[in-house]
Length: 173
Image 1 (cartoon, one colour):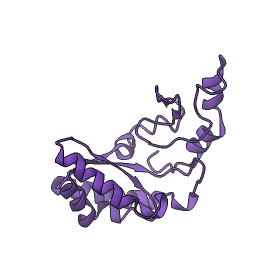
Image 2 (cartoon, helix red, strand yellow):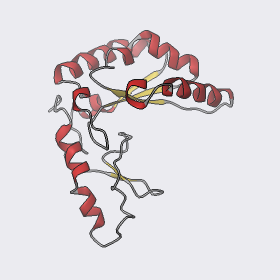
Image 3 (tube, one colour):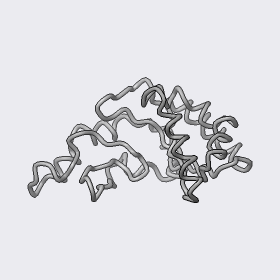
Image 4 (cartoon, one colour):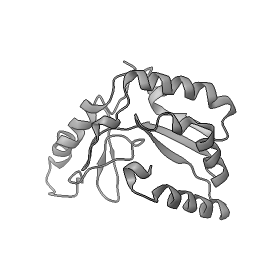
């Protein structure tokens, strides 16, 4: 996490989790799977740390190199993802937190957002996300900016959404 988000971010997240837990809030984590993190995020040490901090679930999403600082080298290969999903399936019954994996679930039907069939608009910011399960967005994707009748279509056909659709590994289709 610190490698992508900055030094100390992981510690701040864990401190915030402890505070939420101490106040009785139910919460989980979205965990980004990269070529650099795919072993660590399903390690007993990491999952135990989540459990100790009060996380009830870990939702896994695969890194997509879009946004202001895309890093294509972090996209896991199809072989990496197959290895990750096999590991995830093997540890799921005994994991200390619930393990959720939309990529694996959608593997049977394919990613609807990658196909351009779905997208999610944050009602507060107006930003278009490629998928409700993928917590990424790039600048310039708000449908509230430059308001006109075709703004949504403009954002859907823009560079951000094109990059998302083309950069995702097609390991399950």
